[in-house]
Image (cartoon, rainbow, N blue to C red):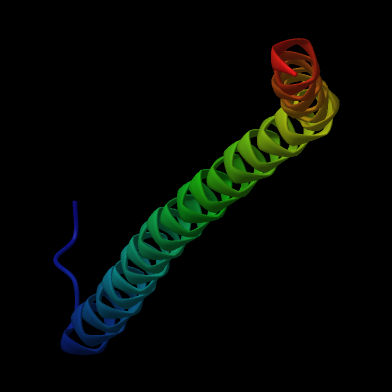
Length: 94
């Protein structure tokens, strides 16, 4: 096998350097993609937590409102019954 000339060696070295540079650029771009993916996943997790928290607060608020609506008539009935009993006692005592 014949020995390579200086020009051939320089061409091969230049080609190798370009190839290594392209490989390095690919690695850097992949690392950036990993960082971007991590950031996007973290953002999605945060938004999901916020949505769940808002939904939980909404459900609790709705449950409290429903309880208020159902207990108001019962409370009014209890107060009215108490007043009626007191008035009947006064009438019976006279």
